[in-house]
Image (cartoon, rainbow, N blue to C red; front, side, top):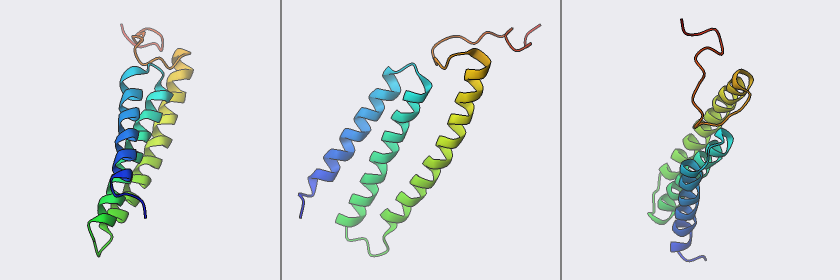
Length: 107
């Protein structure tokens, strides 16, 4: 059996790497990957807490299933938005200011 602290350490590493990816990257796809790493770490924490806590209803596993489902829907929507922004701007840099006159907007 593995040491009980190992899953917590792996989850903390996933959340830390994901947070760094969210804060340090300018590319929208890399930010999305960072968000997914954070959600993966949260799911690992839920499963570990449920397994080590003696949860007889497996609520940690059920909550992790919800996290995975919501993460999958989030990826689909975020990638659709990223593709639309790329087609409109020609890049997906999240720090670049939007050009209000590019799509006929503005007065």
